[in-house]
Amino acid sequence: MVGARLGVRSVQYLGAVRGSIRRRWMTFGGRPRKAYLTVKQMSGERHGAKQPDRFDPARAAILDDPARFGYVPVEVLLAMLELPDGGTLVDFGAGTGLYALEIARRRPDLRVVALDEQAQMLAHVRAAIARSGLVNVEAVSPDASVSLMGRANGVLALNVLHELGDRALAEVRALLADGGRVAFVDWSADVDRPVGPPRDHVYGVAEATDRLVRAGFGVVERPTLAYHYALVATAERT
Ligand SMILES: C[S@@+](CC[C@H](N)C(=O)[O-])C[C@H]1O[C@@H](n2cnc3c(N)ncnc32)[C@H](O)[C@@H]1O
Image 1 (cartoon, protein in one colour):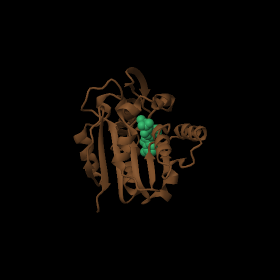
Image 2 (cartoon, rainbow, N blue to C red; image 1 turned 60 degrees about the horizontal axis):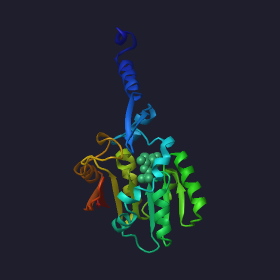
Image 3 (cartoon, helix red, strand yellow; image 1 turned 90 degrees about the horizontal axis):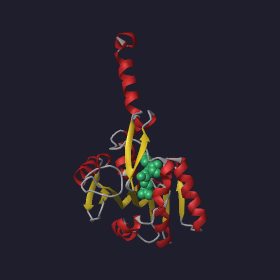
C-alpha cells in the first residue's frame, strides 16, 4: 500500500534511512556504548568500509588511555615504518593525537602530520600540541593533504582501516613518497579481546590483507601484537 502511494524508489530510500539510523551497541574498554548511524555516515564516501560510522568525538577521552602503549608499543610502530632521518610521517585518522605526539617527542628529526577528518578531533590534537610545546607536529584536515601527496615517507593508520572507505584508502596510498611504508595496525577480528570494537566491526588479518592488495598495496611484513593485526604495506607500482 505504502509502496503504491510513494513509489518503489521512495520506499527503498525510506528503508535505507530507517536502516541507517538504527541503534547499534559498541564496546570499547569493556563498557557497552550506544552509537547511532546517520544518513550522512552511511553515504557513498564510506563505500568499502567495514564500519561505515565515524568514531564518535564525544568518546575522545578513551583514545588518551596510556594503557594503549602497552599493547600497541610506539617502538613497534617506529620499527614498522623505518622512517628516514628528517622524514615526514602522516598519522591518518590521528584522533586525539596520542600516538602522533609521542612519535614526535621520540623523533624530533621528523615532521609529524596528524590528519583527521573531524574538526572536533583536530581541536583535541591542537590543544595537545599546545600543551606539549612540540614544534615538529601539526594537525591538518584532509583538505590540506593535497600538498602532502607523494611526500610522506610513512603513514600510520592506527585503529582506522575499518572506518576507511575506498576513496580514503586510495588517499593513503597517494600520500606515499617512493619507498614509503604504511603501518596498518587495527583491532583484530581474529582474537577475543577485553577492549576495542566488536569483532564484526573490524577485519581479521586475512580480510584486511585482501582489502589492501585490492587497493594497490603490497604487504611486506606482519609483526605480531596481542589484540591487533599489524601490516606493513608499500604502494605497488601500477
Ligand atoms: C578510532 S579513531 C583512532 C584514532 C587514532 N588513530 C588512535 O589510534 O588514537 C579513528 C579516527 O579516524 C578518523 N577518520 C576516520 N575516517 C577518516 C578519514 N577518511 N580521513 C581522516 N580521518 C578519518 C576519525 O575521525 C577518528 O578520529
